[in-house]
Length: 183
Image 1 (tube, rainbow, N blue to C red):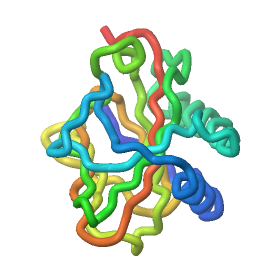
Image 2 (image 1 turned 180 degrees about the vertical axis):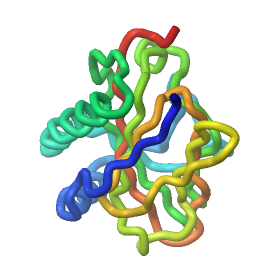
Image 3 (image 1 turned 120 degrees about the horizontal axis):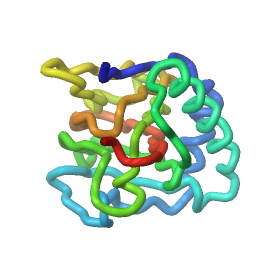
Image 4 (image 1 turned 90 degrees about the vertical axis):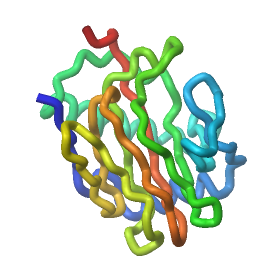
């Protein structure tokens, strides 16, 4: 069964604020798409790849534990590695930050092996309006919780989006777990 799974409080408020501070102090880049393409009609956000930030190494340790448990308990995918860096994204109202409907499996050696997507909600819910993470596992759309520290998991082939942020700013942390391609 294709599912969307959420874990509440996977990251503490302090951990979320620390990750947001790491992004604010790092050099952010305009968010691209798979293959380093850019399309501001599809995506408007700033991103920091945590592998580029030495003081963020602890984040990957937390991610490995969180993903391992969720995969074992819910998905049971054949996961072998994290072939890409964790990505912190900032969706700001000044640009109507958003990411249109897309799936995370794409062309390229790493994107083609994405199996499980994890998105952590770093901002407190009152910090922004709009910016909903929506996943479409079937004909119905599921909206991810906005609780700070919660994480949402879904198979990387599912369509999902972030609606435009209309006020404030939304920070999220995304990682993909990789394995043999789906057959």
